Amino acid sequence: MHNKILNKYYFINKFDESHLDKQDKGTVIIYRNYYQKIDEKLIIKIKNYCKKKGNKFLLSNNIKLAIKLNLDGAYIPSFNKNTKHLSYSLTKKFIILGSAHNINEMNTKELQNVNAIFLSSIFKKNKNFLGIYKFKLLSHLTKRPIIALGGISKNNLKKLNLINCLGFAGMSFFE
Image (cartoon, rainbow, N blue to C red; front, top):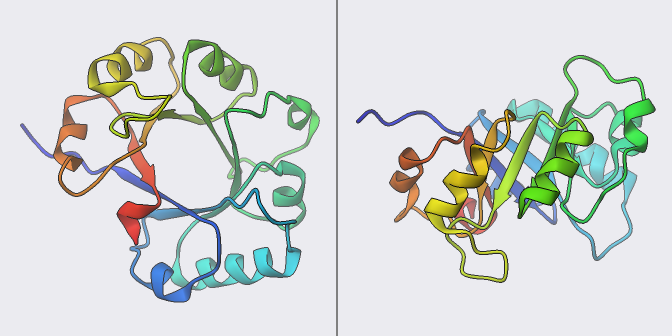
């Protein structure tokens, strides 16, 4: 069995150059911090740093600001059911990603017209735990590309070859 090259998505909640320096150009950086008010200057600083390094940069849960700051895209978390962004004019390069934990949330993400769906949690045993088999079943219920999320480590990375996913996302994997 061949190892396929998976896209990588790194969630950050603060700007730390040392962590971003370790990432290759194929890693998409997603700023997600729900505990602080969004600081536009910080977002612009991260955007410029990512652009210099060759990484795409997405903002979580604020599509309007991502468009205003000319970011590469936005990430819509599972709790966001809003479809206002469908009336915004987007560039063809603008990426919208969304996360889901079950079939209802996957349907919502399809209505939000996301480019790909983060499906979680594949390995992390929390309240949203799916496991490999349930993950595979859910991933076949959509035509959107699926990105694995939750508990991915260097030890279980090869198991992602068993499922049909575009890539994987996380925080601790990249640190």
